[in-house]
Amino acid sequence: MESTNEELRELSLLEQIESDPNINQATLATKLGVAVGTVNWYLKRLIAKGAVKVSRAERKKLRYIITPEGIALRARLAVDYVERSFSVYRKTRQRVKEHASAIRRAGYDRVRILGSGDVADICKLTCLEQGISVVNDKSAPTLVLEGYRVRLEGLK
Image 1 (cartoon, rainbow, N blue to C red):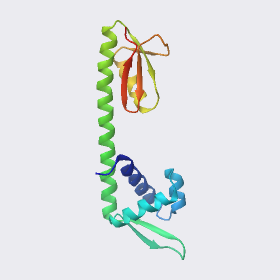
Image 2: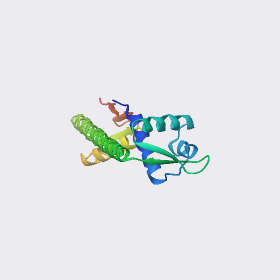
Image 3: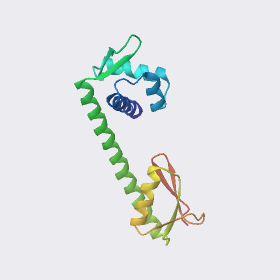
Image 4: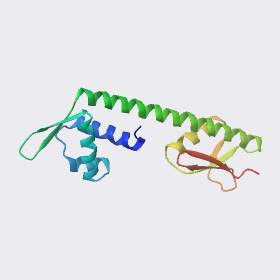
């Protein structure tokens, strides 16, 4: 099984090629935030899988064509990404609901969230739905975000 990062890069690469078959590797590298050599490696893998074909558009210019296999791969990668995202969302909400219950049992009605990004947004939404105010007070219990992990600190 490929790692999530590899699948996301392949998905991004296929989407970029689909939107512009005349795109070059340097532009792909810039858009994906990776080195040109990395793009070249991924393209070779996609070509070996039969997901992408290459044709010469001009003497030194290549044109990338997504094959039917590539379209199927893009669809599968997109579905896998959405399923993983929903799984993270559900697990994070469940964990935060458990923390919200512990916060209430300890007599608090507010929490501080230490972290940012999508997981922080899920935490904020879940806390507000549970009637827990989100504050920036260091004396409040704190949800500490470490990647996808949510830890509760500061209960007395």
